Length: 306
Ligand SMILES: [Zn+2]
Ligand SMILES: [Zn+2]
Image 1 (cartoon, rainbow, N blue to C red):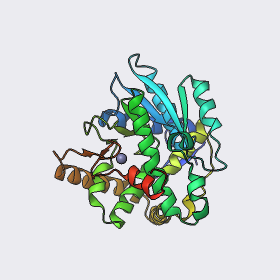
Image 2: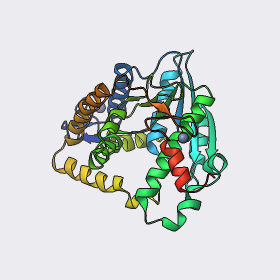
Image 3: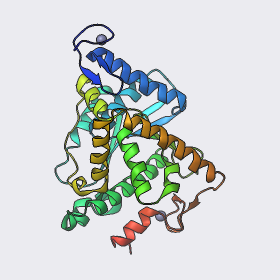
């Protein structure tokens, strides 16, 4: 099929809108949408030091590429990247470092082993079947590390590669768990003005379906790893993902409709909790809605702290 805009060979078919686009117009459409989201949600200020959480996968590499294009034009803004090595066997983190070097972005790596004193394979190797456990432990500890590291190094925003699919999967998982307050913590900008110990998180790819991020990375030839986390196979997220993909397959546009519903729910939940400043964890001082933060609870459960 031909591109609806220029007649060149089609590269990507947007099922939900019925448009075929050539490579050039697909890249243009993708970047325009991301930049519009950044403007509309005021995700970046001219004085920001944005730290990208760079796993080396297609999402975070794409986010870094676009953020680099943007911050290059703002002399007062700063961009750097942090790769967290959770200690999961067989993961290749070299591509992240090499890509940063090739585009001149400052890059750091922090290992779970150095930071927490253990790695994920070490504490979960025996429980590989329990993906639910692995993913929530890894997610919480990674967020905790990134937030603390970002604050200590003067970053004013943490950017992650979360795409549209990630966002609606998270929303669905919160609904399944009956955890509606957590819906208020979704959105393109999380934790702005929440607490001085919390570095706001931005998700610049939130409006981009996962398969489009994959094609964007492919179209530009961005180096990235495709390897899935070995623990993810059995996680609740994977089950939810398969269900949502099935829905989109039979009803194109479902994912976007769901994202709009998530936006509405998120606004309602935030409104309801407005003025309720989060407290701090009694053990580590990190911002949390509870007496003890999730990271501390997990570390205690894993018996890695006395
Ligand atoms: Zn075209
Ligand atoms: Zn804590």
